[in-house]
Image 1 (cartoon, rainbow, N blue to C red):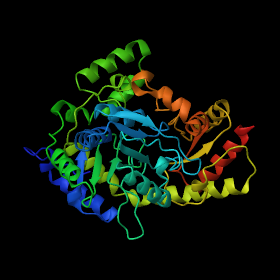
Image 2: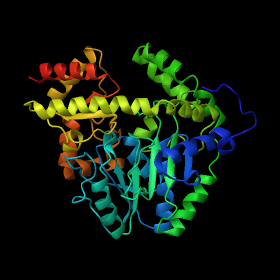
Image 3: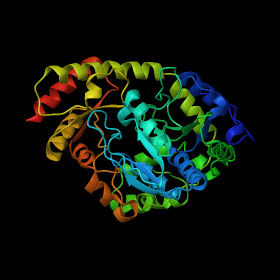
Image 4: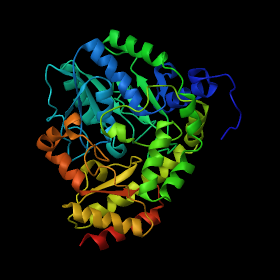
Length: 403
């Protein structure tokens, strides 16, 4: 990582800010001027929802419940109402046939779950979303610096949000980027978004100073008994000495931080991590191919989304779905015990589970989204940042723990 300091420079004035925008533009075939940076992706979504509500004057934002709670929290923070749509078993993203459109629908968030970018499905979704007069927001949190493109190489979404936070393709813990379509049909919305993102303030100095000590504080908290850990974490969070992945107030539907532009430390970490992104993605694609072949060839009670079986995209995780939560927990525990970390992401819905289901309207999701619930209960995540040999061993562990 570059060690130089940018004394006196803040937010978008930092030279590395321009460098990161140019890097993202080169990887996606877009223009650097259409990219904007925020401290976290949830605040980028919040800005988008605020302007959609203000310009389009519609209240509802459609999201899938098989996602992180921060997506729905951003809907609430932006003054809109979360409405849940079930997912497709083929790609674990929104099912075009199940989106509950109404005259109140202002935005639809399409998530590339675990990095599965199903461009054919998204093209169909864009058509029905635009016909409904809504905005298509692409959630690229799990495939940052990759986005859905049409046959001509043009991005499909109106707004594309990318995260570099926890358990992402590049785990820099903080930092996000948002791309705004320069040819957006609603020019008033486009201009409002540009103005809003261009005028974001730099991150609070206390927040910026918390970034270098993040891992140290995590390690301290992990070695303390819960009776001490929780109040200390809450104290650090209140003083902005520690910014947790998801805070208790966010799980209750409230915001922790105002939208802002990240500082030098965050931006330079992302740039540094992006230097190895090609090797990162290549290794993940190799593991995906091993997993896909194994599950195509073996008889098993475990289900795999058909898109994952037919792709060599660099997935963040290779998704497998068990028939029961007990089986999923047993296999996940066996992987972790063998030293192959398998995240619990996705179980429960609105992971890691919200504190106030009424505020998030989660009961609606449980009633209307059976595929999402089934997937959430049975999800098993096979790591992809492993060698082909380790991928073979992981398949053996899964097979042994399945029965």
